Length: 162
Image (tube, rainbow, N blue to C red; front, side):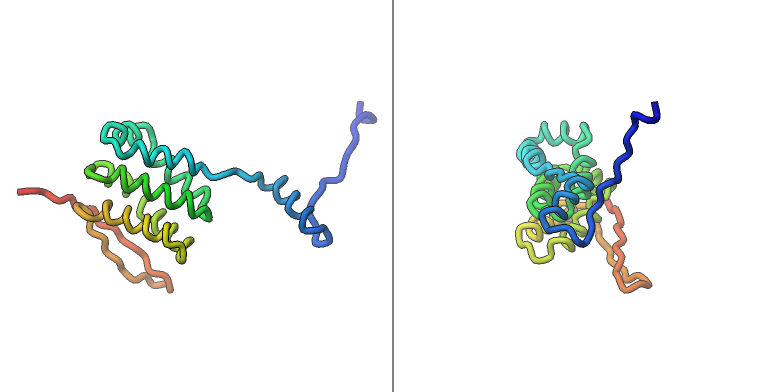
């Protein structure tokens, strides 16, 4: 019956709450989800093996790594480990390089560089991934956009041996 139903006022953080209370409210509103760093580290180890490179790519590993990087952009450790995954998946496989690029790999790598501009481990891992991704078969052309930011245009050029 309606008489049995009680209504409670919703609890929301206010400026008068202590820092500890603010943290509790933040966790209630935005649950703390740990980045999947260990899982991505495992992928990076398996990706060293040519067989598992195929399995990882065929099983949706590339989009999963990109989703992890997008979901946790401030985790330097995760960004570094995900770059390792890209580097190892790209080694010796033009098909994997093209798959990473077509899934938005370049954009997410540049985002990691911007978000962690003073973190040497992220910067180095991104550079390693870009080197392998772009070394043999991709031409990267930068152009200046009309806004204050530069845009990047990627031309896919497959190297053909004569």
